[in-house]
Length: 307
Image 1 (cartoon, helix red, strand yellow):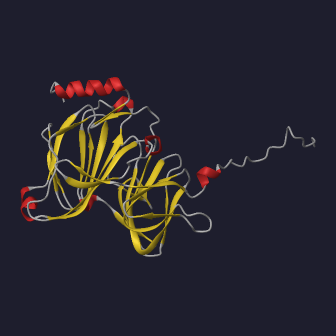
Image 2 (tube, rainbow, N blue to C red; image 1 turned 120 degrees about the vertical axis):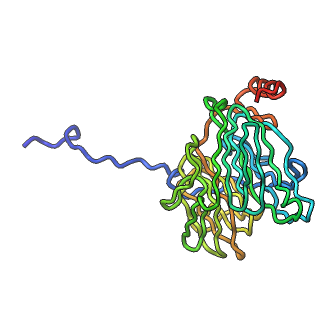
């Protein structure tokens, strides 16, 4: 029998582990969303204000629209405006917004609806409350998120994914309620399809003093935006995290999952994550491109009526 040597002994390889990938994601920073006005004067919180876009990639902008209780005659919307080079995600929690665009599309985004619009090479659109909402007023609350497109899809044809509330699945997990808009949660898949950055977009409500854990793909940019209540986000081994209150954004470092603990009154928040594009970003108003020259071309095309 031949001797066993280092050259003949084959041992199974143990996969190397990356501590940054296997851990719960810690919080690298918390910012407060300043208040402002959008369009014809409806109130918003600028969720990403002051945050380095490299930390958000592929996301470039998010507004929390409202929450506001309008009196009769007060509801407002936007004028006609252009977009190019990215996607807009409108998620309505309460209230109604009517959408029309230069391609002849349109529809009503109402309680629980989501519209994932790929602006691509260029589109003009308008968002406004319907006449009956203007007449009677009412609660208005939602979010609009901008997701960048890679260079090879900047000029793609516009398209829409209109998703009524009945098509957005909900699941429960240890008392938490999770609405799955995009991505996967506990084997439940969100209805958004064909997005190149593989986004995760969840609306999560956690009861008071309950812990919440959820996988987030390693390598994805990830964040939590709290819009009701407060809690600790990015829990460490001792169960402590960063306090994140209403109207604040927590940026997460890399890792395997999000861990959070709701405060005394519970908390409701968005979990937003996606694969980074790693491309240069040139942004001016409603245009998100890769270079300044492309921004100038977008402005020229818009002014020439070529959208």
